[in-house]
Image 1 (tube, rainbow, N blue to C red):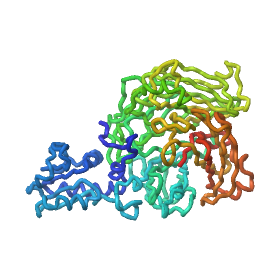
Image 2 (image 1 turned 135 degrees about the horizontal axis):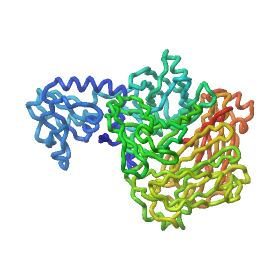
Image 3 (image 1 turned 60 degrees about the horizontal axis):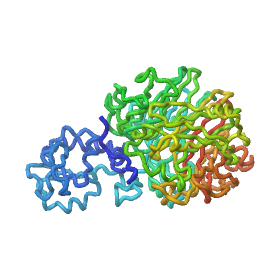
Image 4 (image 1 turned 120 degrees about the horizontal axis):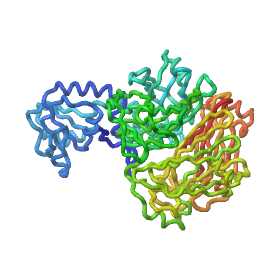
Length: 636
């Protein structure tokens, strides 16, 4: 039941075609277009670019009377197009057909090439009838330019005293974009449009804030939980809409943060934790397409188990559904992990953990790849790659926090995982190493770093530090580079928790191996830092944990700048820090910038973390009186 569409390729990147067909404004036009061709009579389809199959996956064209199909490439002779075997277009269009659909955008030239092969009485139409207005496009001359579809989805909720707040900035301005604007569409849980609006962005790196309370007030809405579709127009540099999404409540115990939803639906996701006895885990499924998710198309299984349990509920186009994982897997218990069978129907989903006490937290699962194989070279390259792929995460002050690590299979080829963890003090001193051994795919463990340090009689002299998950080739040799982990943090005083997950990369080495170290812009290696730190509204404070990981020896210290901007992008103040290699730096907004600078920055301010000497990895969160949030940062 999985959708047969291409969404993302690790070779070619994101695919714009499914976004072009699936845009909410396109969907409105597509239904009228389909109805018109249903009544047109005998149809012929010319599919020179193999775009029709994606259209037919997202829309119901079963009522069309397709009499003939044509292809352009000789090697595709006979390829089925809507059930008809594809003939070469050179044979000429069947004169019995009333209408010819040229299944392409920017079709003028394609039509000119074949016009003499089409009988005069045959009407020619194309997907150009589904185009968005040129005013919404970055590149009107090439419709499927990825920059035309810089889109993403967010979970937006304003119900039962719970609110959400999307925050980012106009980072496209820094890449030369002008006249940037956002087109936004809010759907309720049933996929009904609650509001559509457009916001022009200042010609600067201004803050972008969409708060559910303000949206509710602006459009006079009742309680809602649904999908916010965000389309950034006239962009440059990035076709991705990156953001932080804060969840907060009227009750001070409600606070969590997640990052952007990743704009490309996947077949599989992993890293979904099973509930503890006092918890309910809700998987928020947001249908990303203008077609329903059929009953039985979505499933869950225990990691490493072939027993897949399917959801017997249909989810409407652009609808949102909260799946209680216990409905499908009632016996699953933390630290067991679950695998999500998504069939490319939805973007990377969030999950919400609801405690019996009423506390809540939201986090993300991650994309599980099915295109990888173990890399036999990795175990042989230790002398060159040093630690190679490593996954850094904070070790928060053990007296105040529990820091828990769960290694997470994130590729279908990961049947075993040879793994170790190195703990570093903030000063960069290596404190201890824990060897997990060669974990089987079904193994679900939760490693408490504080308990480990106590048992080893080790302490962090700085009071905090970080951990790095790395491959341990003394335990096994199968590794694919897609190493992931789930990191849970529990505040001892409040009992509140947060969790975040990410994957390993190579950091701070001049040599390049298979595109690593990655760079946010340009070709690898990525040896510089530009991270976005959103700042919480008063009275919340903001914390940031920066880690300086290095696969091989690098500069002894970073040269890190913290640049405070107001909500219009104007620079207010700068501070600097020197972080030791393999060390970290935990700081708060209230301590980094004095009261006068914070007052000048005002609400909606943000900080850019900049370093030209190394690539840092960062985590950010908000601190309240009775709760906190934590997630990894994003850069651009």
